Image (cartoon, rainbow, N blue to C red; front, side, top):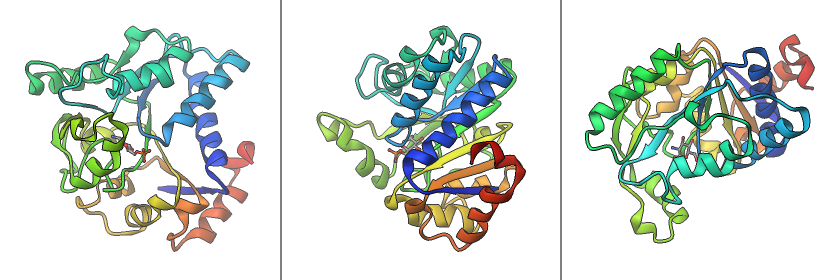
Amino acid sequence: MEVIIRPDKEKAMELVAKLIINAVREKPSLVLGLATGNTMEPLYAKIAEIHKREKVDFSLCRTFNLDEYVGLKAEHRNSYRHYMNEHFFNKINIDLRNTHLPSGTAKDLDRECEKYEQKMKECGGIDFQLLGIGKSGHIGFNEPLSAFFSRTRVKALTPTTIAQNSPLFDRPEDMPKRAITMGVGTILEAKRIVTLVVGSSKAEILAKAVEGPVTSMVSASALQLHSKCVVIADEKAAANLQGRDYYRWIFNNEPEWDEFR
Ligand code: GLP
């Protein structure tokens, strides 16, 4: 795992935007794993802006989102399908038929999860997985104790996650208590993972995920097992990391990051 610290959330987000754009330029038919949440909103706006300015072509790109709430129709303003269309897909030239999210209203949810895994496989697997980290340490909606070998399935949400996300609902009590999520095992199969974490509210959980023991109590700590994972954080989210100086040195000196300085 590599950790990159940028001075503020704009710089962190800009770096992730560039990595995604570069990946799409390198492989136009990129299979992109996507995340939702407040952290990603300005990121998607930034990518859309670069797409417009520099004519980046998303027409062949395929996407798979991490998760969707159980019980919300695609048209519901809090569904992740709605979020993705509003914040990203409608702003770039992607073919909506190439964008995938599990359906939270499928009659047979287990079958829906199996189909989702199958579709990913048919596309050759995820090339580039974008992640955020929830306050409970989740990636996707893999709440504490999610098996590291878990696949796409229905997961009950923790009180921490419900407290974090329910204010986004008109009536907070309407937030679903379950979600379909790719498993930790599914996520770990991505060829490359980029995790964006910003703000002081994430400092404690980020330190646990990156420098703490690998434990299913903190799903994001599973990322330590991945051979090509970078965590991009702003100074606020990085505040509790022991290795801050080393991580800053990496960004300032390693050739891999030359073009981004
Ligand atoms: C949701 C998503 C996660 C995301 C998390 C972080 O719970 N399921 O994939 O990482 O939100 O959200 P935020 O960026 O709003 O802190």
